[in-house]
Image 1: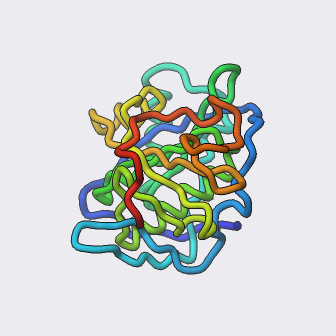
Image 2: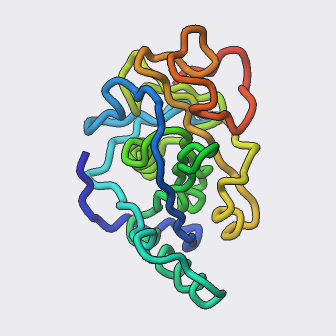
Length: 227
């Protein structure tokens, strides 16, 4: 999937802020077969009052580029980094940040900016950064178009019909320090991705090794709600 730069409408709830993180490393996960759906309409998860069909936007935001520079030091440099990410979020609507990838810590990617659209931020754990970014940009496009995802929502709008993703409420927010710094609190969902057979981590026969995709919150019930 290629993303073209295109300015997004600024949410009316105020300008979001952020700071970029970077990570590196490899994973031994078995990727989702086919990966995120590229193009076509994106149907958002259930919303209050019924589902909202969210048409995928022509363009998605690009990852902020500050991660390619040396780490900032001191309050002044940190403020400059925050200002740069604010401009990215203001221009594109949200940003995708990456971290982890060190021994004992899987990669993770998350959004900063969806809070201004009255939606929780979304984090993905255990995927290579490019795949995670595609998922999160699809989520951002759907949210911008009016879709809302909630804990327990299962949807095939972001991938193949036989490989739904599920959203869980995040309780372990240690990886989302930037969101907490900006907003004072963290309201986030974890996007749980399936293996190449369409199985989720808690389902029998799941193919990826234990610990590949740590769950950052509890399952909402025995069966996720449809969407």
